[in-house]
Image 1: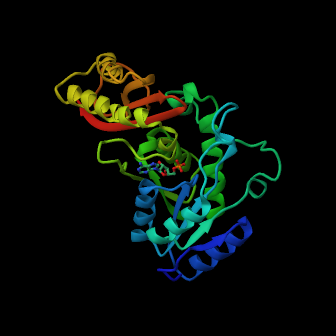
Image 2: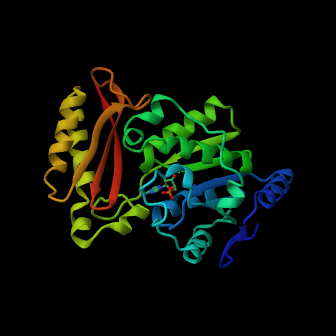
Length: 289
Ligand code: AMP
C-alpha cells in the first residue's frame, strides 16, 4: 500500500475489503484496524498513527452503528463529515477507509447479538440499556470482516475497551486489542465527537470531568480505599459546575468495573455527565492500597 496519497483507498463493501486484506496477509503483511463512527478528531488520529507505526496495512472503518443507539438518542443528529474524515485518515497514515452503509452491514434485521453480562450492564450500560450489546455486536462483525489484525481502541471509552478485550478473549477472535491513551484539549477536556454539541458556556464548564477524576485519584493515592468516599469527592467537584448533571461517578476495580469492597490494586475512576444534550464521559487509572 502506498502512503502520502490525498485520500485513503475507499472500500464500501464487505467482500471487497475481505479480498484486499486476504491478499495483503497472503503477501505477509500485518493489518492494523481502527473502528470509528467518523467525525474524526485528534483522538481518532492518535489511534490511526499507532496502527500505522505497528502494521503494514492500516484500515479505518467509518460507520455510525444504529444498534448502539437507543430510541431518543442522537443517531440521526450524530455529526457526520465524510470528506473531512477521509482526508484526516490519509494524513494520519490510513491505507484503506472502510465505509459501509447500513444496508451493507445489516441487510436483514439482526437476530444474533453479543452480550457480556455484568460488564455491559453497569456504568454507561445502566443508563444506556442495550448500548454495549450494540457495540459488541458491531465490533464482533467488524472483527469477522477484517480478520486477523491488531485493533486499536481509546481508553477514553474505557468500559467499551474492557468489553471488546473480553469479547475477543472469550470468543478466541484472532485480534490483538490495543488500548491507547486519551487525547485531551489543553484544558483537560477529552476530545469527543459529541463535544460539538456543547454551547460556549457548557464547553467552558466541561473540563470539570477531568478535575473530578484528578481529585478522586489524589484521594486514592493518599490512601482512601472507600469507593463511596472517592465517588462522593468526584460528585462534589462535578457539582461545582452549574450546568453539569451527573449521571455517575464511580471508583471500581479495573477487571470487573463493579465495586466489591475496599479499593485494592488497579482501580479505574469513571464519570458520566450531561451538559444540555451532550453526555460526556471520561476516566482515569490509579492504584489503591
Ligand atoms: P467513536 O468514533 O467515538 O466510536 O470512537 C472511535 C475510537 O476512538 C474508540 O476506540 C474511542 O475510544 C476512540 N477515541 C475517542 N475519543 C478519543 C480520545 N479523546 N482519545 C483517544 N481515543 C479516542
